[in-house]
Length: 497
Image (tube, rainbow, N blue to C red; front, side, top):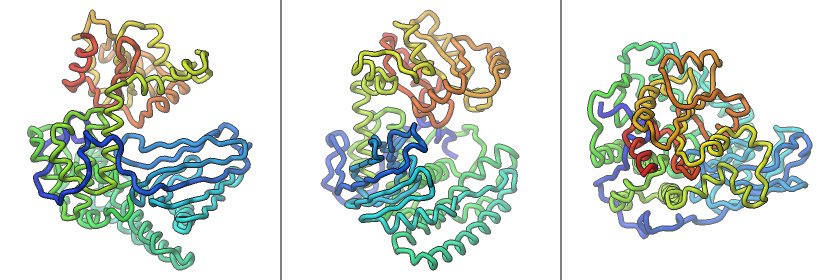
């Protein structure tokens, strides 16, 4: 076992490989201002019966990628319900269209026209180039959820056996659907991949969840993980599924730390080059090997850092050659570079400050739930380190002693430590504060404040941290700002110089 911190994001730097690849004509990451996009795809349509959901005034299209939220596009809905997107998918890939459909397929050059009825949410019709496969996907997903609802207390191999049985039943249902609907070859490839990925996802998550509950030794590892070879064969560049990104993260974890489920660090992490080489050589599937590395690299961009990428750019440039993977990483690299150069632009957008500049008005209904805005206004001239947590969140609680140490270290400095509790009762919240003898400012969020916080800062899980400088600009954000990480202390010191 090499390390136990694969999903604490900041602990892993970027990787590179020594294997030789054919030369490409791509510019290095630091020199390419925009990723090579390929052919444009157009997605447009119309929603009828808007009065059913009058609060819906925009349509959001999300292309999953290596970012935390995906590549997000927004189209306003006019009074007749018309919307339009022009995107560059780079490769055939899934996308979501909120609030219309959560799983569709788009390829470079496609042109989709979507008609949807808010009064009949199951009524979606797609026409145009690429419409056949999407209509079949929509019909199939109306009766298929892909979920495995088995108890996490089930023993390892029994859980796998139950999943195997459900998979067999799903294959039979899929065969009936294919025969009844005379499905296309593209749909058949998509469905086979999706059904398998759902199965792999259930299996790859389960051991850790079971171990947390039972603490029982995992003795059947070889038999349980027999599905890994099939997983490796399933992921390829013919179409990019949304669930690839999460499954590959777990695939990386298995290759970097093995299947030892104890989470105590027993050995130092592998050096950068060795980690990269291990991931790149972990499979004979050349696309998956690149995907594994790209996923690992994205830990850095998710942490709003590009420095490590710059350090190993030559090796990375030589290794990742797939157009989709390069374009996705390039987009994230450029985003972080822009944020680093001027964090105020993104900070103002998140906080709604750009509306004030445009309209000259400072009061908006949604601001009443914006706790962070109030904190900034009442603590001008002070930096803010904000910890978003909950009493039921074990990782949040583990970080509390480190947070107290960090607060003590900066006592007397122009920085305030703020703890925003997003769950459990007020009584439990107060008991937890007393138990850990936490200093700083503690706020128990109402439901509206909690929802505003999660939506405004796109928080998908906790703990989560926000760092504002003395001018009220959010200079960093994310789980990588944990108080236990030395880089967090360094980042705060840099702010206060």
